[in-house]
Length: 111
Image 1 (tube, rainbow, N blue to C red):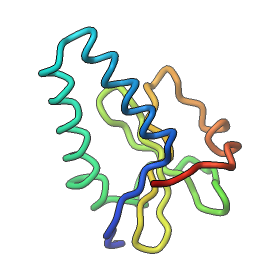
Image 2 (image 1 turned 180 degrees about the horizontal axis):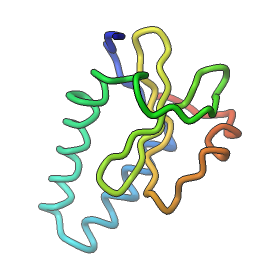
Image 3 (image 1 turned 90 degrees about the horizontal axis):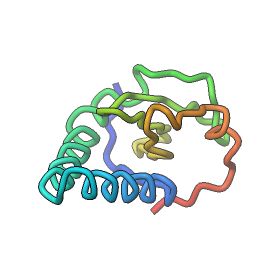
Image 4 (image 1 turned 60 degrees about the horizontal axis):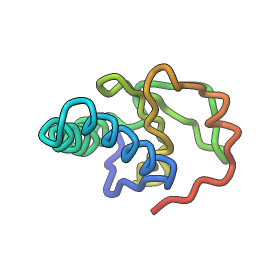
């Protein structure tokens, strides 16, 4: 099992999170929005980081690295692992999911 020491997000993933937070805030209010953010952070750091690269194979590749997909609430988190860093590529609602699109986007910017 790999030890993930760092998690980086693509700009697209940051925008995905912001879009989800806007929608949750409009539909359910700021308390639920804060709850979503807290649950997402806990899921990525406490669960996904530990099982990174073990389950969720997609057979889609980004610059030679296999993209993994794992469900979170009503979304899917797409990521790859390089050395001891997990790169979150996108966080898409299930109806938005298109693995082929993720494999074709060649210009992700990670922060």
